Image 1 (cartoon, one colour):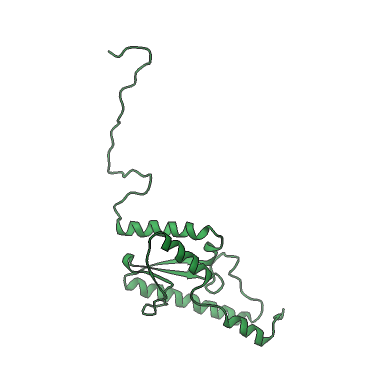
Image 2 (cartoon, helix red, strand yellow; image 1 turned 30 degrees about the vertical axis):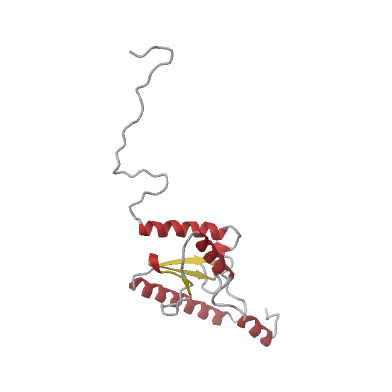
Length: 172
């Protein structure tokens, strides 16, 4: 199947694809900001120029496009039918570079979180993802806190109730 656009038109289209301030990034940043998190964006001093840097939490967030970083088992992560070998090599290089950057950041002491474009595709999804990230980050600062609705195993609790009584009879 041939491309429906001329080479010049395809080049123009591809040149307009952004590498930063994408819609999924902006959605997640707004949701995190609304939860009180402050961050830096696209810090060139760090490997891979992370999308969101939460220095206070020692955490970095990459918002990866499913197509460009080939999200496994995602319907958006398809290989184009034309020039297939080029695209396979390009995506392979992208994934390899991602892994190298994640490893370098880990060696520097950063925790790396990867959020995929498809996880932010619906209007409410950014809130769901931001809530999960927020819980993870708050645990990082206070790891001794129990999970919501969970009673720590080491905490023995007695029964705080009276002995069973039958109604209608006077207690002795």
